[in-house]
Amino acid sequence: DAGVIQSPRHEVTEMGQEVTLRCKPISGHNSLFWYRQTMMRGLELLIYFNNNVPIDDSGMPEDRFSAKMPNASFSTLKIQPSEPRDSAVYFCASSHTLQGVKLFFGSGTQLSVL
Amino acid sequence: DQQVKQNSPSLSVQEGRISILNCDYTNSMFDYFLWYKKYPAEGPTFLISISSIKDKNEDGRFTVFLNKSAKHLSLHIVPSQPGDSAVYFCAASAIKAAGNKLTFGGGTRVLVKP
Image (cartoon, rainbow over all chains, first blue to last red; front, side):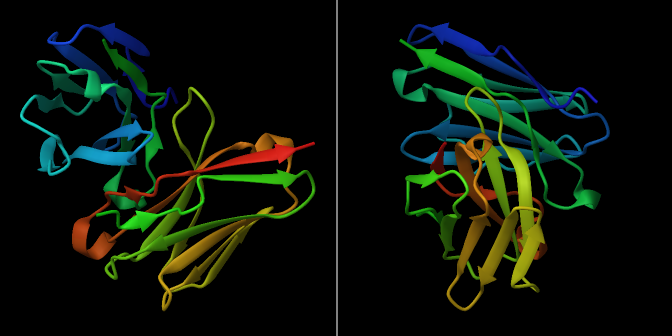
């Protein structure tokens, strides 16, 4: 079992550029979550999907952020345009609704916006 | 408005002694609670959980206690080992009301000294 796979591991970009983070959930899982970790706010939920459908995007900070899940094995989180305050670690997690609320996390993407 | 709070950002303990991590929550709809452990440059990994119908759950060196009336839970690690040095996140879910999304606290960094 490969676990949740995120890419890239590190991303350094300049303010105003578009950033795309990618996630492959664990095969068979039907829920996918995007979290952001910062010193000030800890781990905050940005958006989550059930069966590829966005269920709750209330945590998405601004319209600059968007997420898609075109199929059960792939999701993207896009920031356009990026700003220095978006610098954080972004985690993707997956689970199966029939197996409770235990989430399995990827290793994260460390984003630095200069 | 943080619904899950970990008021101690850090904790230092001697190897072999007990580590006690605390977590408070405000949402009375929360009915399932988890602790996650996170090493640097890795994603959080599940450690132990407890349902609101219980007040204690034990797994080896790890025990979680839940006090529903006080909206408080704690994680006890005994005996503490150097490999336990990590950041610990408390998380809560309102399964019946909000599905399987998790709300996390800000984390507590534990350092176990040999």
